[in-house]
Image (tube, rainbow, N blue to C red):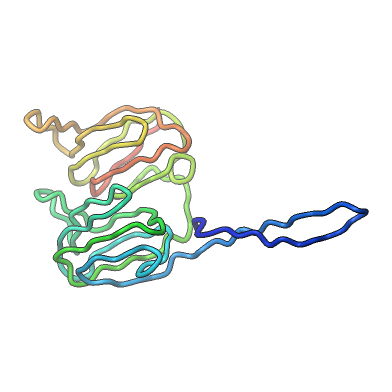
Length: 191
């Protein structure tokens, strides 16, 4: 569950002559949403929050703010780099564009826990991944593995020197780092 907006409720409490201000934060809950092809705004068409995005009918591109740029389909296709789901946080004001997909579900992510088997998506170290040193191995598909702290690899289940694709990379993941995976599946093996 992510922070949508915050507002302060100011209460003039007098306690032994002292004045106190009470601040309350309101959290939004992501809401199940199904959308067809088109352009949408988070906060208007989709509530802000963390979602797993899946194509229910068809395949095509899903692009937008927050580094969202995937080929999504109701099945996987390693040759196209197509994944069957993508998990990410959608911030208020972000745009989401769906091309070529008749029906796309945005399903709220209700709980977060440390994982070592990850599907395509944006994963936060300290929330989804325990900080530490890992060998990150492709288990399904091929695509980009990047982070906001400098990881930039093309991973796949088979190496390809023409593409610069490797089957695994060893990295230290730091609390707060965001790991972006376009692969259908990766495994994190603790070093």
